[in-house]
Image (cartoon, rainbow, N blue to C red):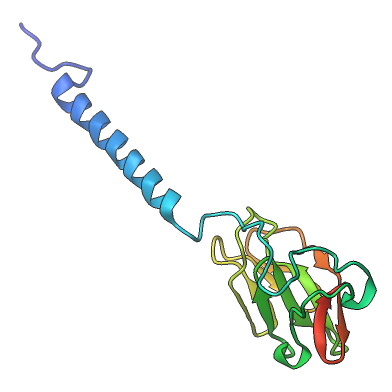
Length: 156
């Protein structure tokens, strides 16, 4: 008796499978590399921040430009300015947090309903504390010192 069934797959099956896998991997890499959602946060200063420095003193002094008007930062919401998120705490004071998600470094893209949201993996942070409230992030957003002077918000 001759045996016609072979236990291992033939090259006619394996080679096309390997080619398809490699091509799909390269295509996936190219698409992911071009995606804005997967890119880490920019290290450039937000517009109007006076170059991203500390302002040369307290109270936003040193001629630094205002980041925003205090009235622009609504309760349970906020404003994203480059690498900074401005929100209001329970007492109504404006506060700042890093806009870089602590999960994998994506930049948050929305602030609403008491949450700062990251588009990459669904993390969300409390607008009053920066603490993670949803998604894979386990670490709070780092606070950024800001101060309000004459109705305008400055980096402290």
